[in-house]
Length: 222
Image (cartoon, rainbow, N blue to C red; front, top):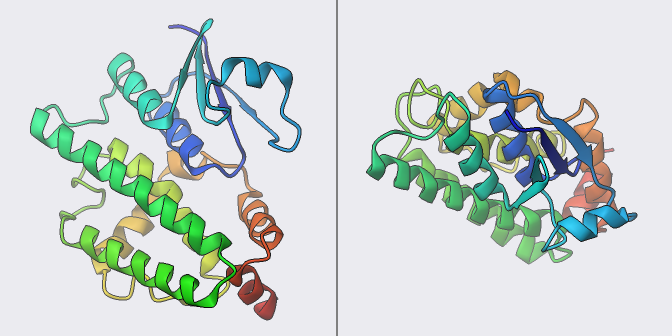
């Protein structure tokens, strides 16, 4: 097996996807978290977009989380994508849906406008209600087997573990299947171990640094 080195950031949800896939496959790897306020010179030389995650495979570099996860799934057992081509394509589509959700979460985290904040809250609720309609019996996205869709959504749900300490935003009010899925992923060792124990504090520190509507609400309950 080639030497694998994951270049990451301590709270990046996309890097978590790759870490979860590596852990699920029990693949030995090294991990380096980048400080974006003090990027090492070597990072700029190997990251075409200046972003994480990157996966170094011996002396070669792969970038973008979806591509990294696809590479890992094609080269290391067990497979986390379905064998059926149609189902595999559908899973890829829902992973992309998860990326759209992360964009909404970014705005929810960072907007200073209370009206925009509420719009994003409603958008999150609506999108999770869409997912509710496609979930099977569980415990995971497609039933019994953990998949790359689960690897994509574990980091999404992790945000809400912190949000729950601020307020009940009602995002999952109408989605019992999503709530059960969230709980199952929270208990999955790969999801739990994709971040350090101080992740919640790191995320709260990030939110506070943005001087956002969410930060103001956090301060009100501190």
